[in-house]
Image (tube, rainbow, N blue to C red; front, side):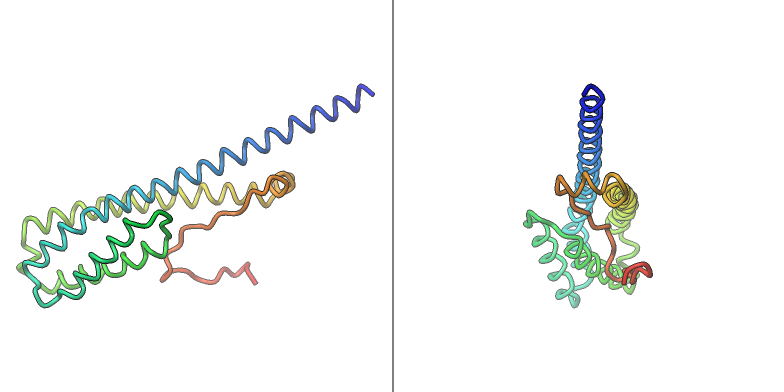
Length: 177
């Protein structure tokens, strides 16, 4: 009887440890995701200044500038922001730099150059945050799909998280059917 009680206690301890590990990993994923959101917001806060600077030089590119402003405002208003929303804005943002490259007088503007440097720094920080997020998601998903974590995870209804992937670079995984 004593051995059964000890085994029961050990199983309970094991389940508690597994549950706590899942909770810590899930919270780490949430934290990493919020870091991406912070960097995206900082990056998108640069957009109005950049748009105003480009507007002064590119009156004929008003449609692109308006679309960027509209996408930025839409992104900032959403409570549940998705990676695809950020991707759409990034695509238009790339178009803005294409416009800027065709204007030598804009490229020599001190204000534009400062904004461009700030944006490059933000992009670097954003890429680092994406790598951290994907690493945290991979750890969490691995724990969720390997034995014995898969049993505990399924019992407590933990679900897999998606990796951060940029749509244009997304390729079919050869391991998926």
